[in-house]
Length: 166
Image 1: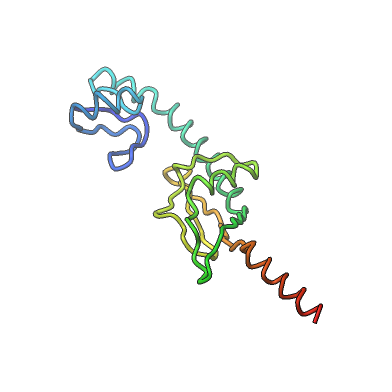
Image 2: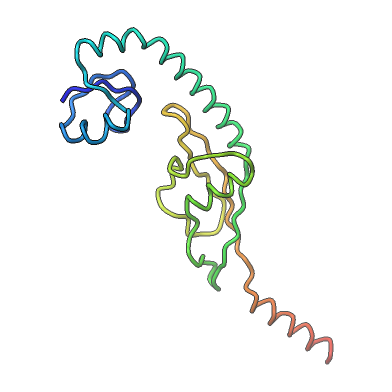
């Protein structure tokens, strides 16, 4: 099935490309999602006519993405997690947690655009890429710090009280 892409589709092609895909993929996913249309002589001619409008729209979207990338590059996010005795995290930091903290600072993002290959399972500083546009990627600075155990604080308090009374 020959289709004309109306937007960039990962691992398939860019806007305006004519691609050959399996019938089911085109009929059940690309066309209903509005990502492509059938590539007939009539639709190709119409698309070429509207291509200028679409290119202006894409430039505007890229500009907005670059502005948002600049804003996100300045953000510093700190996540506090419980830590075991050897400094290992209980659980991990997920893309959902990062997205929630970014949105709490007033910047809306889609967590699915975070390029976190695997959840963060260690303390330290990390740079998490966020794909805002096919040509624009922002980096969010995430710092994971350990949370003190309440039992450890209580034990330290108890020791301090014993030394004072002695």
